[in-house]
Length: 215
Image 1 (cartoon, rainbow, N blue to C red):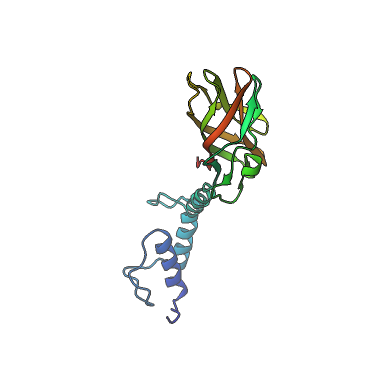
Image 2: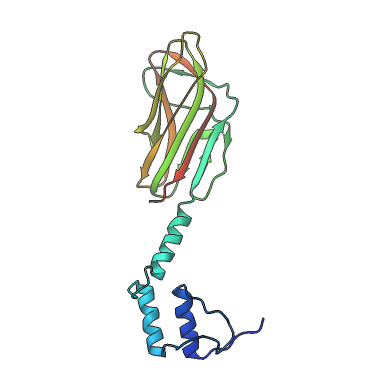
C-alpha cells in the first residue's frame, strides 16, 4: 500500500478524529468531510484530549492507556496441585507447614512462580490477590483438621477451614478462599495444617491457586 501524504492541517485533524473515536471514512488525502480545524485549533484539541478536558469527550488518552496497562498487569496467575497423593504427614495441635504433598505445577504467568517441590506459590509483584485452596484428605476417624494459608510464615486468618472426619475415617473435602494483600515482594504463600491431637494427614487430591485481583 503506498504511503499517504497529508498536509499538516489534514494530518492534525486526522489525529484528532482518530483519538476522539471519530475515524475518517477514507484514508485518501483531501477526503475529510466538513470543515477542518486550523493547526492551532487541532493542536489545542489534541492537548485537551490527552488531558481529559475536551468538552463532550469522556475519556483521556493517558487514562485509557493506564486502564489497559492495569488490565494487562491483572493477568497474574499460577497454582500447584496433586491428583493422586499418598504422602502422609503427622500433625499435632500446633500449626505446621504442609510438605511433600503437592506433585505438579499449573500454568503460570510472569511474577508468579508455582513450586510444588516446595509446596508453595512464590509471588514477586505487589498487589491484591485472590487465593484458593481446595483439599481432599484422609486421616484419623473423628478427628478435627484445620488448614490455613500463610504468607511469609504468617497466618492469613481469612483463608482457612476446619473439617471433622467421620467415625469411619472418610476422605474429607474442604475449601477456603479469599483476598491477600501483598505489600512487599517476594512473598511465599503456603498451606499450614493442625489437628486436635497427634493424627496423620494425607492430601489425596488438592489445588492451591492464585490470581491477581484488578482493583
